[in-house]
Picture 1 (cartoon, one colour):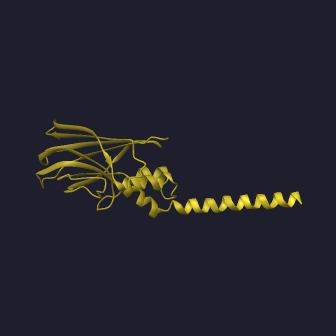
Picture 2 (tube, one colour):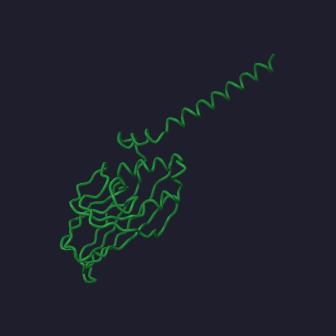
Picture 3 (cartoon, rainbow, N blue to C red):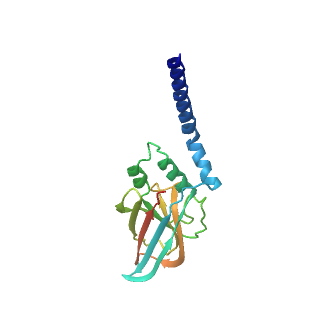
Amino acid sequence: MKKKTVGIGVALVTASVVVTALLVSSFYTAQLLQVWGRVGITLETHSIHCTVTFYQDGEVVYRFHHPGNVTDIGDNQTLYWLFGDPAMTEGTYASNVTYISIGNQGTLNDASTQLPGEWNRTLATIEYQTQSQLNLTCTFYPDNGGPYTADCIGLNYAASGDGNLWAYDILDEVTGIDETFTIDVDFQVSTGHA
């Protein structure tokens, strides 16, 4: 009789564990993760720093270094990755955030999905990548369609379009940007592990 009771007890415990695992995994759906970013439950990137250097005819005219911000899109993408979305392994997570954009009229916040007044977006070079660090760089070569104005910079998932801004930074406005300028951008992202 004791073996039968123990066997039934083990079966009940096993069934409880399986049911709990199914409930927990269904709890962390993509829909819920998107809601989390909107209600302030986030796994923020602890450190995003952006350095932007503007050169005109080879001379530095402006240098900016400042901590950046993660958007709700970036928060949600980070959650997908951390909770093991099979499409968001370390490699794809890092390689998806490889486009740097520059824009004007930088009214940005966590809900922003694209830089306002974006006038260029280019593929960045991954200079350094580990599980908790990513360093992306690029150089913009403005064309003769200017003059342009710049006051915001962004990290994006795609080469163009709206809805893929992962992080951004706002800088002091630089005006009169034309083909005599080059603009070097360096985004350094590091995440903390609890």
